[in-house]
Length: 138
Image (tube, rainbow, N blue to C red):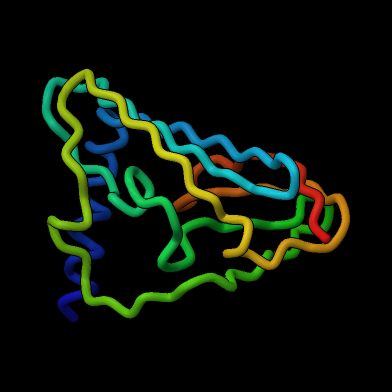
């Protein structure tokens, strides 16, 4: 019940957050490594909270992104670390001051079961617009 209430409270804040903090995702694949770069920019007049998992961490501790194979729409399975945790708290967010920018890059290569060979993928975060990238896995 408490998790549901927190989820609803967080969802209620999303429109205000979206109006102030802009998130731009970029996924690239070079030499067999898939990197996701998240760049936040606070365009509002007040400080905003952004998820630490995306804004500061260097490795995933749970399925953060939805990835599908672009041609078939088949979901790419998350196979990375899964940290059992309780509901999100203030410690799970970073404060982004007005006018501030923050960029972070996460290596997701071993966290998802990318298909062997060369494939095009679509990556999204929390239902946002998908980002396309091509990756060659062994």
